[in-house]
Image 1 (cartoon, rainbow, N blue to C red):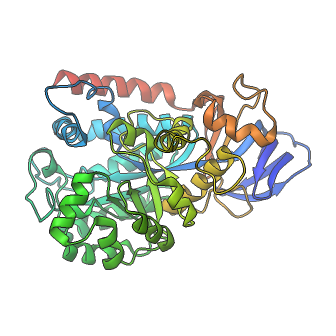
Image 2: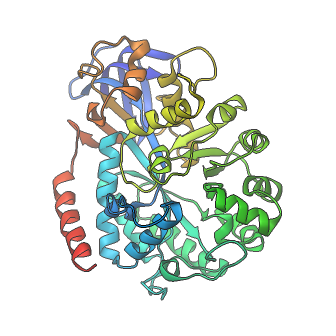
Image 3: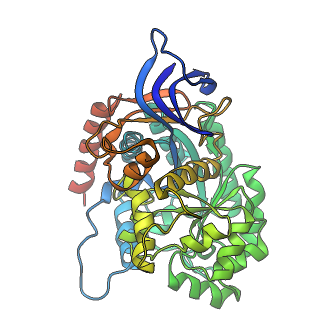
Length: 452
């Protein structure tokens, strides 16, 4: 059981709150009470966020692409470097890197991750004997770290718009729909050995990496689980899809796919105003990755238009160049301020920006990951995070300002404890298996770099 000096409940802040957890879910919430012997005592308890979009392996190349060569650097030049990097990864390295990433996510305050997993085959494209070999490696990492996992095997059939052939590093991604269905079945089988809160959805990578016929066949394979797709991340992508399909990516998707609240549109950066409103009204969650989008030069999301249309959103660490929940929150708002030359942009009306951002991201991220979480309420998954309001960046703030301080001033070090479906994986700010996993990670990346 957990006893908190204060907790953020659906009704607002409450004091002296005792949360009872049974079988991974919140069995009871009592405010204005006293601790019982054996309770875990914390300062401030919040619903933990789900990190809705991650490519775990890219964590190991953080800092390797920040060098300007001749000419203009862009997402596309970064992608070429990423392809060359992943072509050396072994299954063992994939698992170790994923475990390190998940430790860092949990210590940052995330309880769960949506792993958008597209590395399926051996270097050169030959399949493993088990088509879910690398999916199983991600799952093994999650079993060790205790993070809540929404695994999203990716359908990636083409190298670009118009059914361009796969080439280079893309060969490790490739499947036709039949091959993808076999992979998905194997991944679902492997997931049966994980905790009950594990989810297996699907991820058609993007319109440029699939085609209308394949997408129509793939969507029913989700069987009600989340569907994630990269969409409208780059102006070049928007132009190429328009030339091929006769419509902009979001426009085409809304007209040709059953987009609803079970979908997550990753990035959705370059949308016209009408597309923004229409996608928001569909119920799809916008999967925003502000640190990565800034790092890759993608551009800012149309936040005010999205919120005005009632759109839901969540946060993802994507390339994992920097895993920081607090920095994702502030980078999202700051990107809007820089574009609009204004302050306090991402709030629908007068009120706390930090409170709106945090609660909206908690709700939207949980929905995108298919997790019954995002709030501290009876019956929900016990995805919980505790922070220290006595930290120097927060100690001067009252309750109404606390989430503003968390979003705009605090480091991730204010996180003291994290529970993922009741699994108490971060204690005193440290993951329970941090040292062992970090040691294996250092050895793995040393081998990876030495072999470059």
